[in-house]
Image (cartoon, rainbow, N blue to C red; front, top):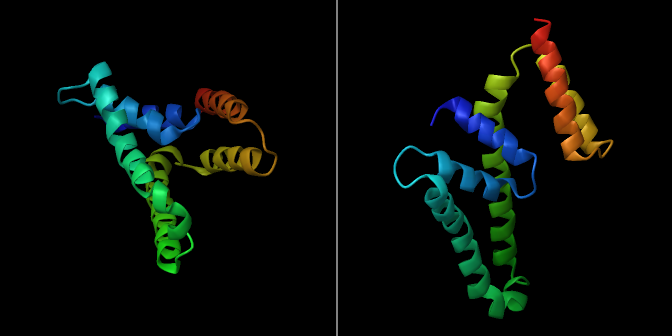
Length: 141
C-alpha cells in the first residue's frame, strides 16, 4: 500500500468513532495480497476484535477480584501507556512528517487541536474546517 493510500484511510478513520476498528477494515479492504476487498475487511475486523473479546470473556468471571490486585492494575496502566506511545508514533510518522511541512500547516493543525480540545467543537466540523482551510492554503501557494 502506498503512503498516500494509508494516510487517506487514516484521515477518514479519524473522522468517525472507533477509528482503529474502522481503519482495520479499510486496511483489509485495500491491502495488496489476497484476500482483499470485502473478505479482507471482514478478516481484519475479526483479527482486531477477536483477541479483545476472548480476553473479556476469559477474565469476566474473575474481573472483580482481578482489578483489585496491584499487579493487574500496573499491567493495565502499562498497556495504556504503550497504546498512547504507539498512537503518538503513528501520529508523528507518517502523519506529521508528511502533513506539517511549513508554519501555515502547523498553524492549521494547532487550530484544529484547539477547536477539538478547548472549544469542544464536534469533530465533523473540525474536519470540514481543516479541509476547507487546507484547500484554500493549497490554492494560494
